[in-house]
Amino acid sequence: MQEFDFYINPQKPTLGLYVRKGAGLPDLADARQWQLEGTVPETDLPREALKGLEANGHAFQELGG
Image (cartoon, rainbow, N blue to C red; front, top):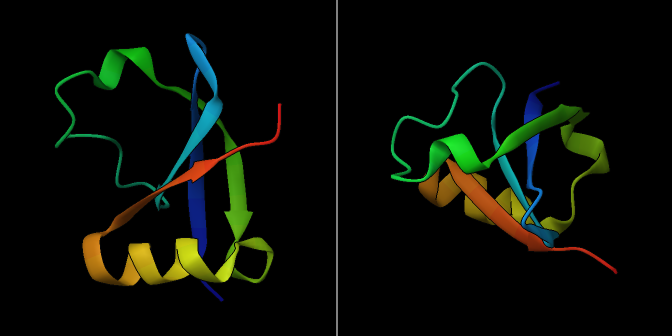
């Protein structure tokens, strides 16, 4: 089972970002604005996030606020 790192931008706490575990955020110009919150197994990810991860290597998710 795959795992993914989950990041939150403290300035925009209603937006989360998933990337493959250990990949980091090398492609983001504003990577320092994101804070690692933990690791999530693929079984806990929404279907749309998994699709984004498969297609792009990352996925954003709107979080409940």
